[in-house]
Image 1: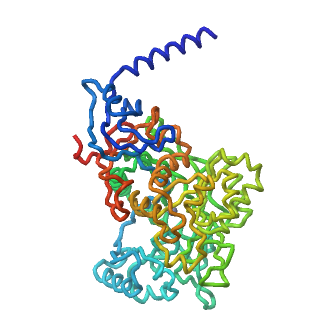
Image 2: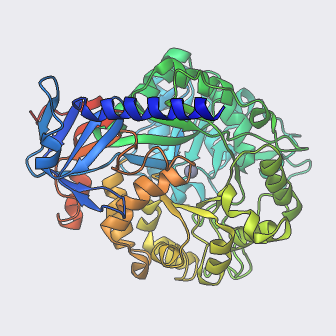
Image 3: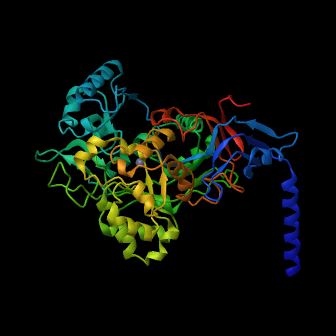
Length: 542
Ligand SMILES: [Zn+2]
């Protein structure tokens, strides 16, 4: 037995020795490399063989690893970083119908009504009219089923908040979505009713009441249309230097994973179940029957389970410990009881799946921390890397508890772009970023909206809603690469420019560590490599 081991070991030595002498497939030379690796934070050049990085060093050192067939890319002083990993985004393909175009993300009700009327005049009766609107429309209680019916009686209309929390439908839409007036509320969601006897649905519905209707709509999307949208998303991502995405979808999970595999995207995708609820329970079937993606296609992974514990500050749905500043009798709303949150935690342990919970408020964040503390010794939790998505409520007094439990906080810096509205809603201590890092809480970054990582890095370095929480661009890139890989248990393979890591690397159009902040969002990739393969080439570099 011992002999065999020695033989195997010496074979391995020989093979790695031979490999070390083989020339690299690609070398990137003369760069300004941010490695996200504390052991060697900067470098000039790197060598790639197969799908991995085999050397990182000076241009002189790396040049020696190039052979006659090696592709040599002189990046001429440009900035190179690990590929970005968008830790939180949504893929929800558009159902067939008319998707209204507004001038801004926050159209007024007047503009919305005019656009709806015009669209109805131009589309055959029965055509779906979809509008993505902002808080102005969604929070206007006059915008309801009756108002939409009066405006557009012959077309199903669905208005949805761009921030994902709040739907408004007219009568035809409710019918098409199979929502009856006697519809019981699903767990974690609710339908609003009129004050009439008997009460009727007023067309406004919230949180998990949105899930089944969303799935009814995605069921109408053909595979071909969904594949086209997936490819568009991936194309946009690689142009922006994103090499990994962690996605939630309103497609049934098995279909989502099948489409991801069919699409053969260059980008790596981790799909995370984002399941609906019934009036009785959360539907765990998708987590229990996680599809096993074909091993050959390691770029698609399926794991975890995500539940949404509260709303957002827009609709005052985020669950707070103190009342909203602009509504002193109201603290928001938890979608689930604390007992239900405890069940989520226990299921995640039993099913060996990472738990991701959307928490926008400090009450929801505290419930999660308390639940972990109540359900096992603190030391047992860090290995499970429980994730708080958004983490706007992981405020100062909760930081030591989050740190002790090893909770990973995923922040979406674009959410820091709403200083006026959020300041009206909640106290200035909300929306931590720098204080999370200072407390030693693992932080990942995701877009949860516009994909552009450089827009998000700009926001992370300015945090206009709470400037004290700003972090450096280096910290932001670290969180967007290594931090996001850690948040998906993948840091051994990706997130850094270091020997042995997957060659997910991006050469950028400008120095993101030096340009003035407003210039950051204009950054693009010149060359995106994923697993050593060219995923995007702007044809600027020779
Ligand atoms: Zn989200």
